Each structure stands twice: as C-alpha cells, then as structure tokens.
Length: 91
Image (cartoon, rainbow, N blue to C red; front, side, top):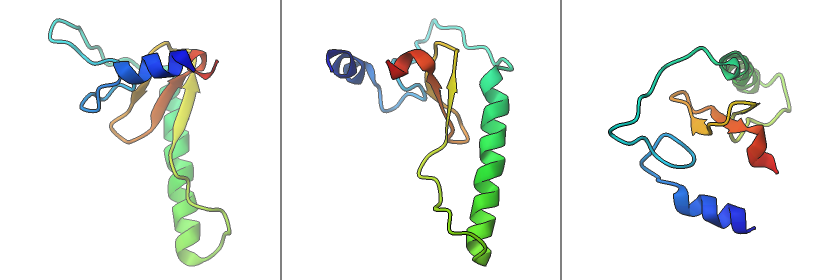
C-alpha cells in the first residue's frame, strides 16, 4: 500500500504518463514497441464490440478501458486512450 501512495504522489494529471512527467531536457523517441501490436488488436476488438452492441447482436458489455500489459518499464496512456502497463506495476 505504501508503494501505491508513493506512486500516486508522482502522478501529474497534466502528463500523458501514468507516473512522472516529461521534463524539458528529456529526449522522447517514438519506437515500434511490442505493445503497439497489442494496442492495435485491442482497438479493433473494441470497434467490433461497439458495432455488435449497436445492432443488438451481442450481450458483451462495452469495455470501460483498454490496457496492454507489457515488459516495457514505462507506464503511459497512448494518444488513442490505450493504457500501457508494465508487468512490474502489478506486484
């Protein structure tokens, strides 16, 4: 519980990252990370579920959020709303 409270204090609501923030002297590089494929698959599934709900062909509830669990150590929320969660954050 102490770790959760510590991480909550590190959260900046104006930052796209779940923990911490991007500083002026930080270098941000766009890379093709493994979570990209998982996120693309999630977005396709979300779209399919919403289409099925719209026509009444399913009883699956609409997802409340989309997340990918990855080995990458950086947690963030992508521009498309998919959360990237490091497996280490699930301890």
